[in-house]
Length: 504
Image (tube, rainbow, N blue to C red; front, top):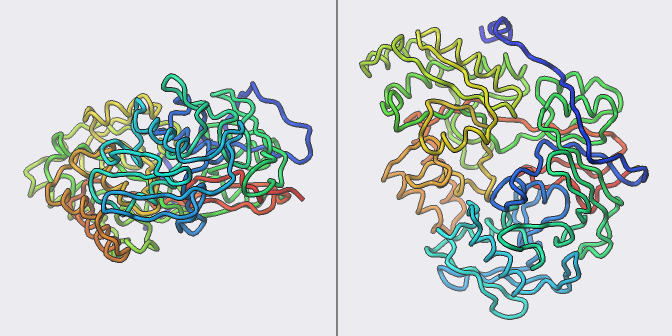
């Protein structure tokens, strides 16, 4: 049936790759660790980009709220918050906190940071001027965030890495500089945007003196090269181990594996506004023709599970369905209903290179759709090189790894960004007024169970209309040396260097 051997003849998997690094040197300090991260500084610390997530993982960036390891909202730079009107939230700041340059954490400095975010050249999805009307100090220790429309999501959005607070010196001429301007437990002292950075302990950290003296963080986008770093002992901790090599690393002495069912899905986007994907029956036929269980077995060797809808089954808003949509005969019938002959279709599938496994996933999809006569040309490219075209609608299909709790610990922001008519990340180019009304309602529902029901309802629509083909639920694997203590993989990928992280 669905076994790895079914597709083995079309896979060419390189388990390890070489890496050439420079610009940072191993520290001789015995109380520092060597970390390998998958992301490098790509946008000069633009807060709306994943550079901000890198800042939180480095132990530098902090926001008004935080999300813990159980996805629960917690205080951070603010100790409490209250919705004072339907469109305003007041945050009371933590007392006696200083930025790393000695400036005080007060309402004026917090408002300055968030207003810099609102006026940035690229708005943050979690804190966009489309949503946020104003930020202003109410008193020395209270800052008010006012929205255009009533929203219960603001405290959750303030836990996003994009809303991290830096001192006034961190903002100049529209640019962000985190060196010495954060509030976190570690201070960034050196940065090579492509190669890595050095951080040292913040002895004056408001949460108590961190246990580590510091860390060297290397940037290695290639997943197999990261795995090689931990195998050879060049790194103490690596982020996002490729599922293909998890088994071999588990058998390597001196390496521990941390696994997490991540709130992240690998999916295949389809351009809903371009033929043939503007035809519902064609999208449903493509969905039925893709064997997601076969992909999970062949590419990931069972290290991930096939997806049903956009959420992990354990989520409170996950779909209730348990059967996968794969049905080749149904796919053929749907094409006939659509009046489209699959053998006439010549389509391009984009597989971006930073996800090592995507070339193999694309090859399997090419073979599966080829069984219907569809001709698929695979285009390999860097993500940054194709994002503009995809957002503008100049593409057919693309593989995407997407976290659905990136902007908040609930999927309202994700669903609005990806599936509303004017969504900032609507790569599927899907537009439904009925769905839009439900997406807006999410922000008004104070009852979490009511929101969960609405998330599930929208997710069911997306699945039923085959807006996107959801392929696998991702499992995040990190690997580290057992001498590192108190390490956990954060579900939203926010934290690596924490105050409690230590060495034997």
